Amino acid sequence: MTMSRGFTSQMARNIFYGGTAFFVLLFAVLIFDTEQRIPARSKSGDITPAVVRGKHIWETRNCIGCHTLLGEGAYFAPELGNVYTRRGPDFIKAWMKAQPTQAPGRRQMPQFHLTDAQLDDMVEFLKWTNGVDTEKWPPNIEG
Image 1 (cartoon, helix red, strand yellow):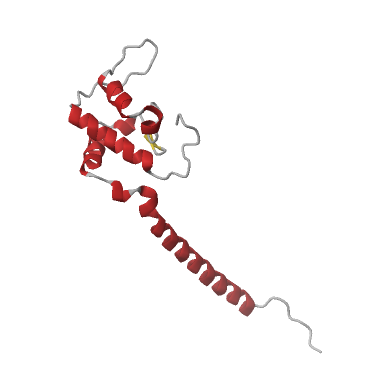
Image 2 (cartoon, one colour):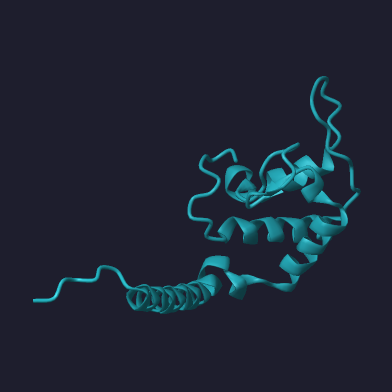
């Protein structure tokens, strides 16, 4: 009867290669699954020319320098990923037209002098971001 030699270098090599192959395959499956879910979660089929123009306004006015959108950006002003649900299109347009409010002790948003068409485009962009499936992020309705 032979005694067991214990853990050999061949066994360690087999565990390493087998584990590596398993986790590479698992990683590939997760990537494939994620890639399949992105179009439905991002609502990329709902991107219209108005949404693109609204995103351009968002970027050229550096809105992300103060606001967060879907968790990205600055934390100086409110999260706007769900502002369409919270406030609605008419409020968003009226709020942007009324800036700055000159309310004492409050942070002030600059007046960008957007046209009605630009405001409509911005609202369309915010409506689209509102529809992105963020898996319930932010965790509260007020962002």
